[in-house]
Image 1: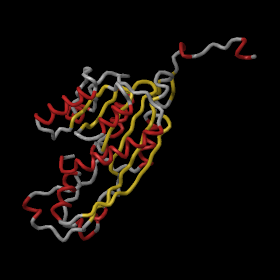
Image 2: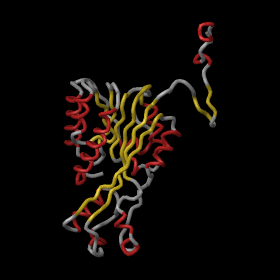
Image 3: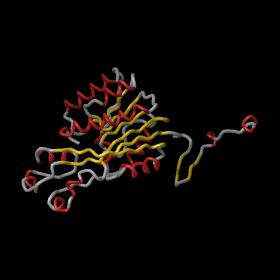
Image 4: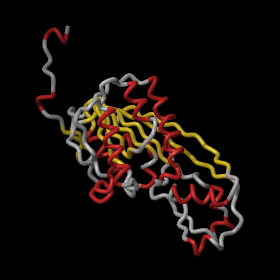
Length: 267
């Protein structure tokens, strides 16, 4: 994701966080992955007074932008120490550099469609969330940019398939498969209208939908005047983290977790 599409990130983040209005959650630590300059952090500081931010800044940020973002998050956290997570390291290792059971809320905006293994991301979110924590996410679904996938255009454009073209049912199933509870999924189509091919190409490249360079860009056919984005939203809870450990589809329960029946229980 590049800065030319910053307005879209901000818009989607705002829509995601509005959905939290009906969610009962007390959050003290939040992980923003990815994190970027926008209105999402001020919204969260208002919703959860005293919150502390742990951020995974976008890799495209310059050194100055990164310094400014870290300083802003330190200020947002009321000058409490915060962790900075390397998004590049996660892409290489598949591990979020935070301790297990360390955050109450994970907010992920428009990231999952670019991950080769979304299930590993869900595993890591489960690991770093505390008992009773919440994961809220958004990503681009498989019908994104369908205008560019027509037979006539597809033969001439270098269309980049999303690494993870999951629809909301795929994500709901995956959340349950990774032990999250009560997943709630939602989807909407956003229509982006363009006055010029250059603007459409800029956004398509920023969204990793096209692979273009100056040479092949000069040979492009007539392009559509709009792009459709399928935006999938979801949230799910990390509940019962210590009740059972699944292995090979069998749940193994620690004996200490089994309650002893007393006479009063049977009465």
